[in-house]
Length: 147
Length: 147
DNA sequence: GGTGAAAACTCATCACT
DNA sequence: AGTGATGAGTTTTCACC
Image: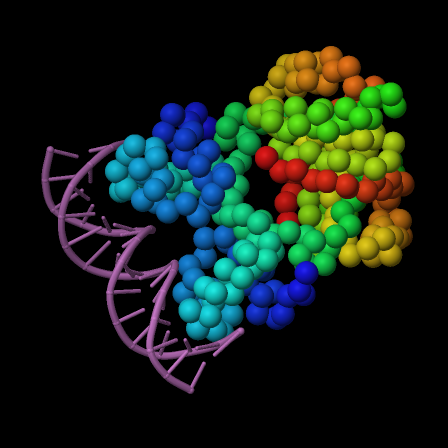
């Protein structure tokens, strides 16, 4: 892992805010030639610093206006099933993010659902019913801020 | 809030995975003209369905290889300070995301830090020392999956 | 590793359906 | 609302430093 120089740091900061910033403006703001800029950005992608360019979608706009964090504890006898469990969970459309934790809880699942019925249904069908799950704790998300 | 039709849904799905997909390929994959495609995407942006285009940065590549979730409870006498507290917290460079919760805990803070010293320093300086904070609980993130 | 200039491609507008 | 064609703008390549 090579540390980032000043130019790379600026590029990362700019692209984090606007992943579609034109290469020409990027080069201008950083103070390098367009051709240099494009090879710098390529290098950041190749080195795994930039992992993807994504459009942020408002969950509410998709009709998913109720978000929650669900803490999940796995039964101590079912630890070996953690990988299989996480593979099942991460594929579900309601799942926004999945945190694999160390500590009292094994996972935190960030979900976006239509309403409380949908949320309850998600927990009951995908979590409570699962053999590996010891317990769950659901907290409603009032606001979600991403940096 | 107008619900998304089939074309919009496809566009959202494609741009979520690759926010830099060229308009030409986007139009081709969805089966509409380029000019139609561009106005559809504009409309999604204007309606607030697409909120931003961002580059995903690997925290490890920035030297922030220790991630954690920190649950924070606010003192019952300091509820009015929640907004001020969240404003302070969200500006910190270690903060990846901030969840405003209903339930036993008031916040969950997702942080990315260099190492355990940095993490402890973050909790001590920014949370434990804060007058409004009743208690915190820190869990290490072993893996973080985003959908 | 960085550069400028040219070629290839993409975006974005427009008159029309 | 959707389309094809057109011109402006952008990305990307390449020979050279």
